Amino acid sequence: MAGKKHPILTVLIIIAGLALVLGAIMFIMLNISSTPSSLSFKGRIGVITVEGPISQSRKITSQLAQFKKDSKIKAIVLRIDSPGGEVGPTQEIFREIQKTVQTKKVIASLGSVAASGGYYIAAAADRIIAAPGTITGSIGVIMQFIRVEELLKKIGIDFETLKSGEFKDIGSPGREITERDREILNAVIEDIQRQFVEGVADGRNLSLEQVRQIADGRIFTGAQARKLGLVDELGNFEDAVLIAKELAGIEGEATLVYPEKDKLELWNLFLDITGKSLIQLIRDMNPKVEYTWSSLAGKEVRENY
Image: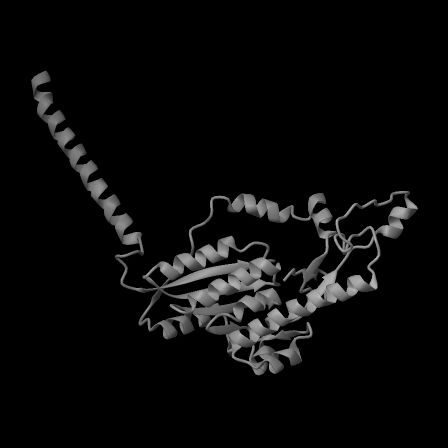
């Protein structure tokens, strides 16, 4: 009986081996067919999302640089849903878009809000698409300070500052702003405003005078912005993709490619949610140059561009 079982066992082993080989082949083929890389014959469009206040630029600029170098990416859609952000990061993103449009088409798709610094980075793109009700514009500068000297006096707390120069503590919450302070700060505001206006004028092929006339901080709908030359066409994200295909010369269906997710994204999300902690509150007490737009709902959207 034992001798008769060996042929059956041998057959079972052979079948199992063939199954493993076939399974491995199928696994490899499935992975190859599901990878839209070099084996894909479709045109590829990179999609980069800018959401929320812009507080850092490294993520967006690195994504732009990655797509710019990838020969398979024929165009880039920049989806913006942001009220703006801090001066340095916003200008760094703007500059990276300027470099990218020299080799690839970049289309800005504006979401519900793309105002102030959010619009500023869009101005560097080849085309700007917005919904009729998109809130955009807000070209202007504001600087705000928290003043607590009267409160500190009432509770018996005093500031004593040792400084190397007269203006080292300019904007400190512990002292009043002098007229000389105001002159210096107004000069800073005017220079930041000039940079904003020049960036929009250059990106949108508008005259400086045209931009200055609307650069008083007011917001516009997408429909109003189009009439002013701040937006090219009215539409949604899918319309922006179609325009990207047309400008890049892609025929047929296009494959949308998103950047690889950062392993630290969850941690960054946690930091964003808890950003208004005590540490952030203390930081907010320091002087900042801002583009600020407050919505009708009373929720302040702060932009340090």
